[in-house]
Length: 169
Image (tube, rainbow, N blue to C red; front, side, top):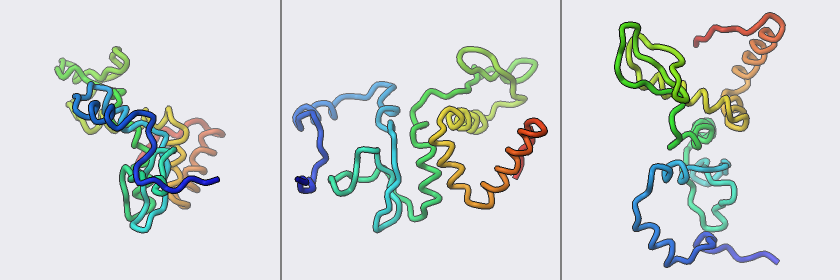
């Protein structure tokens, strides 16, 4: 027997307890926990919504985000879980004679000639995508047929002739 749709999402904790929690400050893991998934994309009348896997509009859940275009929604879906995570790459902030050290896991893994926070974050995103086959598949799927076909050709070539260590637009 099916249950009628509720206007409030199910929760094992009482509303009183949840209200008391909402009055507290989040610690550093709060943002990561708030964005934790897994997530799914659902088509809505106003576009495409990102929901946690166990959520649905029929159960009264609101989407975490809504986008008009599916492709844009897929881009956000792929990186949603990266928000709040410790960055894979950091710098101590001090440039030395050979540039700005880049650290990962407490070790120096390279150097940049000049500090570039956007580049460090982009490398963090790529590192995270490489550790998440599901997110990587979403990115590839969002790329569209032409980009997927060309990527397949590049991958096939890299298997037969070695990695193609070239990037560009």
